[in-house]
Structure formats: C-alpha cells, structure tokens
Length: 412
Image 1 (cartoon, rainbow, N blue to C red):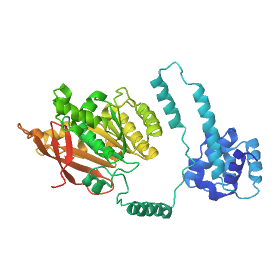
Image 2: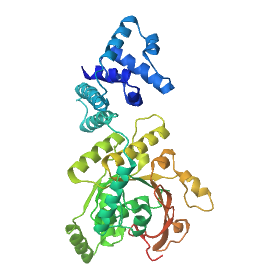
Image 3: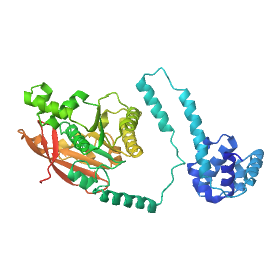
Image 4: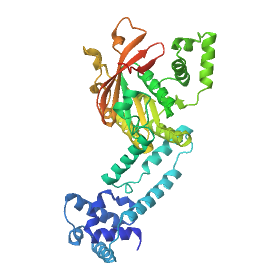
C-alpha cells in the first residue's frame, strides 16, 4: 500500500488519528480524491462533527464513494500515521524545492540571488515534524543544565553579558531571546549596543554587529576609543600623541575576541537571515546586534505591517539559531512632550509588534541630555521596560560622551 493510501485508510478507520488532521495539507497528496477527502475530514473535525462514511458520501460521487470504501477496507492493523505524514510532506517539499530552484532568476546579482534562495529556504519548513514535548522531559533538561552550570562555577542559564545587573535581571543572553534597545535620537542607543557587544565579546562570546547606519570605519573608530580609553574626537580626527598611537597599536594587535561588524546598508530581512546563518556556520555566533530595525527592508506595503514582519522574523531567527538578537529601535516624539521624559513602551514607533515579540525592552536614558551644561561623565539609566523572564527595574549607569561609552554603575 502506498503512503497516501495508508494515511487515508487509517484516518477513515481510526478516529483517534483525527487530531492530526489540522496539520495535514491537501497539497501533499497527488491524487484528487485524497485531497478532497482530507478537506472533507478536516472540515468535519474542526466543526466537532463525528464523521462516518455516510456523512462523507453526501459530498462524494458514485465512483469516488466506491474508491473510498475500498481504501477503508485496506486497513490491516492500526499503525501510527506520523512517520508517513513526515514522509509525505518531505516528498512534497522536495518536489517544490527542486521546481522553484529551477525557476530562479540567475540574471540577478548575488544579493538578489541570496535573498531569493533565503525565501526559498524559509518556505521549505516542516510543519508535521514538530510535536509537543512533555514538560517532564523539558524540566529534566533544564535541571541538568542548571546543575552542569553550577558544577562549572556558573549560575546563569544564559551566557554572561559582561554586566552584573543584566545577568541578574535577564539571566544573561539566552538563545532564542529578542532584546530591543529603544531610545530617542542622540540618547546613545548605538553607544550602548557597542558597549554591550564589546563587554560580551571580552567574556569569550561570539558576536556580530550589523550596522545599517554607520560604516565599518566609523564603528571601528568608536571601538578603538572604547578599548583605548581615548576620546572619540582624537581617534576620529587623528589628533593622537605618540603614546596614544603606541597604545592603540598594542591593543589592536593583541586582540583575540570573536567580534565581527558589517555595514551593508542595503539590507532586507531575507538578506540578514542568509548572512547570519552563513556567519554562524563559518565563525559561530551567540549574539547578533542590528542597528536599527526601522532601516531594515521588508516585503509589505504598509510600514506598520512591514515592521511587524521584520520583528517576527528576527524573533524566529533567534529561536532557530539559538542565539540572542539585540535590535535597536527609534522611539516616537511622545516622550519629548511629557514632563518626565523617561521613555515608555507605548513610545515604540510604527508597530506594537516590536513590543509583543521582544523578550526584553531596554531604554537608555540620560537626564543630562536635557540640560544645557552636561558633565563629562553623566549619571544615566538603563530602564528595563519589559522583561518576560523577570523584574522590570532601572539599572544605574554612567555615560562618557567623549568615549561614547556606557558602563553600569555597580557601586550605586
């Protein structure tokens, strides 16, 4: 008996398999009658109507009804249909993939081809293979991981961020998490993101920073300012003394961290997914930082829908690759009109989907930004506005404008 017939016969004969109907797609089947039966049985199941052949016969023609009866009678014994469904879906996706691969427009440039291939890969995802797992199995895995970490002297379930309070309240950087850093222009979003990435890479983490706004050269100059503790304007303008040059050369040449940057400004969500997967396969990856979400291109016409699509895809990418994704986002001007200018979740621009998809939302806030005279080292705040796995608190920080550096204030 072929795979299609086996599945249909089991579904017709054994009601206990009907719960799988909602995830069975008619297009997986090659025979029109099989497609029709799947549609009929699924509709009845979703209505909560027990179906028997007498109910199906109303929608079947004479020859179809006879063939359906014949299929039902072919059942020799009860057999799980799950492996047969996976086989059927695999064959369907394989055929579709080959067909669409043959229709690729090879005249496109490399970026266009990569985007088209990524979309092709995204559409080739199994739906029948993923099944719910027992909470007992999952809790046992978590306990094993906690015990293993404790034995290694680690208390975190995620990877150390390099910031004590972020480790405490976020539990480190956990695979599958989407973290949003949101703020008004000039509040220091990029400075915070670069500071966090530098500190994470210094702990041995593997990081990739995608900048859609600044060039690699600009990022590198900022980074040199951070690690060399040299004012940014001196690095940017080349106003360095001999000892500064020696210091930078020694630091730059002695680096061993796994920290990559990319300034490709013409980036769609499909480009990003392809690039990140390729990078992880080649270099490994724990943390992805993207500056910033409003500059990413989506496929929707409406901008709110486009941002929602991008946000959801980044959350799914974090889960698929088991990495932490940090995405920067602009806030609306709403906070500027309030007496207390501290940002709120409602200030996120263009789409509530960013807030919904995010596991954590961090707001860098510099009260001194609104003062005429700013101190060299500002007392600043990192507000955790959303935390799916813990408390929403304010972490005391300092901001050094000359270095564009954020640091947590562990003495506060």
